[in-house]
Image (cartoon, rainbow, N blue to C red; front, side, top):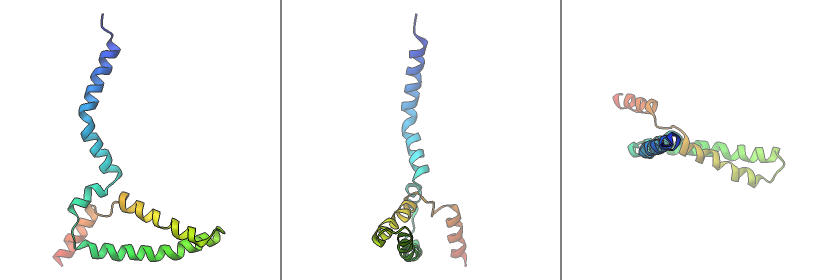
Amino acid sequence: MADFTWNRARRLAIAGARAFPGAATEYVADKVPIVGWLPSYRPRWLISDTIAGLTVGLMLIPQGLSYARIATVPVEYGLMSSWLPSALYALMGTTKGECGEQMWQHMDAV
């Protein structure tokens, strides 16, 4: 008499192993959108993205200094902690999606 629980576990393990590469790729693309849009990044977007990055950076400097001052910690800590949210958003934010693509197509037509 066979143990049905072990046979079922074996079947599910084999099915999971077969599905793993596709599921892992989908998971990474879902959690880190830069993986999806970076291969189709257009060089002409670099100017706009640089301006946006500089704008955010210039806003974060006084904000980091002010929050550190309010928290009564040295202002250097405010500057050191201000870059992390932008870096995380660059990796995990959806900056180049369908909406951005539609905007660029509209600008090309004008």
